[in-house]
Image (cartoon, rainbow, N blue to C red; front, side, top):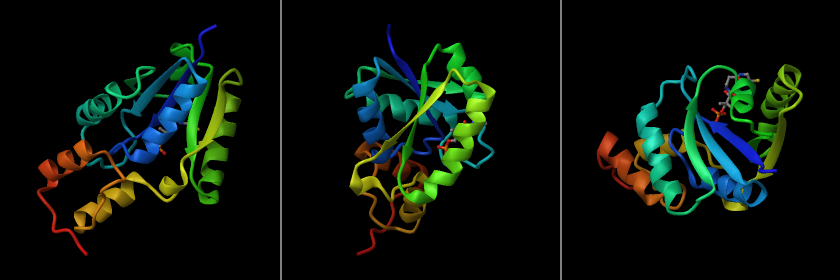
Amino acid sequence: MSRRAIYPGSFDPVTNGHLDIIERACKLFDEVIVAILVNSGKQPMFSLAERVEMLNMVLNARHPRARVETFDGLLVDYATSRQAQAIVRGIRAISDYEYELQMTLMNRRLNPQVETVFMMSAEEYSFLRSSLVKEVFRLGGSIQGLVPDDVIERMREKLGPREQAG
Ligand code: PNS
């Protein structure tokens, strides 16, 4: 039986930490659907279409088992509609645990058939969050190595080149 997982998130923008988790998930599952939440209530830097395009750009070359979709509504309903057996989430530090536990238990209550699988990203990305990347970039700090170079280019196009601190 073919094993399919959903890796959901906002991906605003995709970071090397996300890519690290996708790579690990691709070793466990036959197919990984990277699913961007349509309306998170957050004010995104990138539109949904831009996030889809950026993810496709960085995934296509490297991860043939991964593909990008968008979803709205309950994650477990979307996972069921895609016949996925699992939801993949990355855990960075212990501070992520409580939020992830709440989501997992709620999702399990909503649909016990869908398992959540947690994966640890590589050590060097354990502090990485899209929101931090955006803040550092806005303030002129270097985000080299934290997000793909193509994504840095998109951020420059959107916000203009930044003075690099240090
Ligand atoms: O990367 P993020 O922003 O932390 O991802 C959060 C996400 C998309 C996984 C979460 O907000 C979600 O699943 N939203 C869909 C709506 C839903 O199912 N809510 C109940 C989850 S317990």
